[in-house]
Length: 394
Ligand SMILES: Cc1cc2nc3c(=O)[nH]c(=O)nc-3n(C[C@H](O)[C@H](O)[C@H](O)COP(=O)(O)OP(=O)(O)OC[C@H]3O[C@@H](n4cnc5c(N)ncnc54)[C@H](O)[C@@H]3O)c2cc1C
Image (cartoon, rainbow, N blue to C red; front, side, top):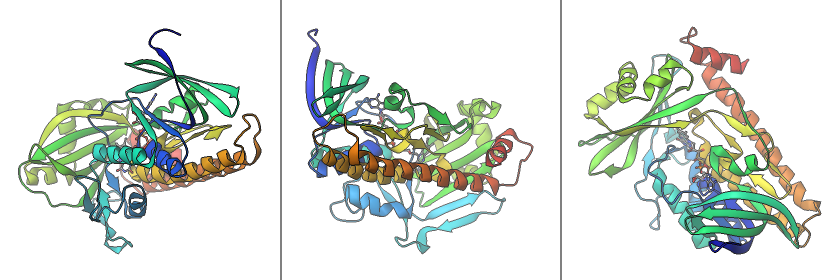
């Protein structure tokens, strides 16, 4: 072993990736008293997409972060949202108002602050968080009750840890599953998101998410919580298939503006608010994908690592938190059932089978909803973006 190489510790569970799925899995397991190591590749992030939470997520937020309206509220820059205004099935605005839901509102979050608050809660619950550390390898071992040996790499050098259970929460990259040879199966779409931030000096009290279909894709826009240098912020995101010429256009400021000018209600909204673009356009994959296997013996995938959705669903964070809670409980029961044996499968696998079955059902439900929403948009039937969605649905 070289000088910078050192042996780490032993854990009940190692979780790779500290987005919402990783932190929520860590919180659930640490509350049972499990020894949890949560590893995060990044020291910090400069942006992250995904800021709308539907009313149905509010109970989950209370569970993992405390009451967003209570005095102990831990999230900076969060506000209530009123619903969605979409120009989707026609040029007529369709309003889905959250007023008629049990909570009466959804939430718009400062995404970086949200992920950080969840991480802080994982640490508060007793998990160990290591940032700026990447997984180099993981190997099966049969060493007493330990099933896994890991090699992690960071600026401080290499460390080796052992654990009984392994959780892949590394998002769309699903690094653990891929290391284990489990393929990601794309659902044959190449959806990609192009995000442009806007700011203005005036007020913007629009609390609706704006969604709009376009000939080569679709838009959404949200007013953002928190002020950027004292200015009001708004995010505008265009989605198209990465291989289409329109996608190449959307990646440049000029092309993005050109496409935006063709929008029916988002461009006028920005103009009326006196918004101007700020920061550079950022891109992110937004296609539908799932792992061929959601878990196996002594490992499981949670959140986007297991299955990632088209942002039209606005379900990614909810699904990450909800399935993390389920996974955390199942892993705890699995570890309780076979505390000593690395080899035996026993009851532990029955719990994990339940989780895997839940993932399969979620995927089927997601696909049918996605295909339904794309299917009710009847325009531009000569455009490849919409033709492809119709083919996927058939
Ligand atoms: C354009 C767009 C808009 C969206 N809008 C919404 C929305 O409005 N509402 C919503 O609910 N969802 C939305 N989503 C989806 C949502 O952001 C994701 O579903 C959510 O982030 C999934 O959480 P996660 O923890 O599974 O993965 P992630 O949030 O991706 O977290 C994965 C973590 O793993 C870390 N990691 C990766 N590799 C390694 C490694 N090798 N070692 C250690 N750490 C690693 C990453 O740095 C990251 O911190 C949107 C997505 C996109 C692309």
